[in-house]
Length: 640
Image (cartoon, helix red, strand yellow):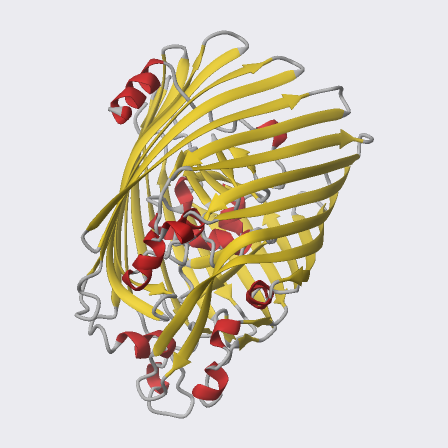
């Protein structure tokens, strides 16, 4: 009944306009399609490597655990993922696999990243936002084809029986996609399909999965349809997405991979009605289903998880030259089926946002939301202040306080800890985060920009998972022992400097450095925080000749990290593996060229041309130099 009322309410007057909070976003980064192509991005998940103020770790080079701007540990993977403002539920447990999104980079116009807790698209996002804005097709009929292949220099090849042999790395197989689009005066339609097929070959993973599956192949099929149209004095966007993925998903609860079949379905619509010059009514309604089940292993044959999510939002927005005021209401219903048990959770959220342009120099913004979930009431708020000191100098400072439940902070739904998950004293444990940021920006004629940032985080009343992994040399499997600890806390301070310099129309470069440290906290929180690097340095340079040929290069340095949950790994593996990931440097190179009047685009990418083996996770794959070739074919406005 509640669902029916929500649908009727939403259809009658509705929520959501993309980029509602653009004027008051803090710590916002925009990545354009040119940025994606210039840097040699192939998989959607490669976007994480372009976010300088986000830390990431990967076991297979394909899915990532992230810490957005020091807002979380790698345990808390509740980043808000959006396509054209519609929330997408990936449900990839401990690691975020952005490649499950039914898109490829040639469909993306821009990627908007938010790295500070605040309201965005109707949700209070404590752990960051990634919003993929798709391209609007050219008028008429158009289509494009995308294909990529890759390999590692260390491929065994003819050296397989010699001392020079080295193992291959994961996830370098082919990716093939096709888009068919059409557009009219007030509408456009995009249809898309992609397929991938790869073999897991790195010993770090193969040795673990051999005992549970004889099939080391991963496969993906994804499709989407996007319909955008103007009607009823507004704009509306419909999205249908489907992804089926056979893979080996890592679960920290078992310390290894489980062979899974993951099916994601998404259907949603969002839009806006322009009631007057100053008032908009915006809406969003979606239904999604995420099903994960075992595909080959007898060990985890009982494992089946299904999550169905219904989400609706309604908001009104008033704006004039001095004020932007928004009020919204959202309702979320989540049904989880696990091990034959069905559980239902409801969440109701009221939220508001006020953006006040005090003068041409001062701008203030307040975000506030309150959520009722599982009988608990959560409060979230952000205060933002923008000061334009002079034409070239800007100062921004913000404070946020946010609350969340343990049930929202973890994807720990593996059967082994199902009992803990369903224990209300744990699932309803309320965590708190206070964040502050001070940003200074200097901009000279749009050619030189200097950004200085100082951040402070105070985590308190957190419930964390404490792991103690045991490594067995004989079969190279890992046994997991863990428990949950309450009332964990930590205080963290960080700072960064970024310099963007456009030397000429041909050359531009960027330099970034960050430092972070924790200075007070509980023992477990402090130990887990060591998995994040203290120092990070990034330098990139881009050459663009006549908009038809370009070369991009990046140098990346990260200091050593330590993983306390693998503290016995050094001894038990006889130093074959380590609980520490050593400091490392990489140099990436990308070259791209347009052909045939910009109908054909070729890109050759070299990752880690220093060819020094890297480990981004204590039990992850080892990465040597690897190369990729991608091919794009475009035909625009064939029939007008």
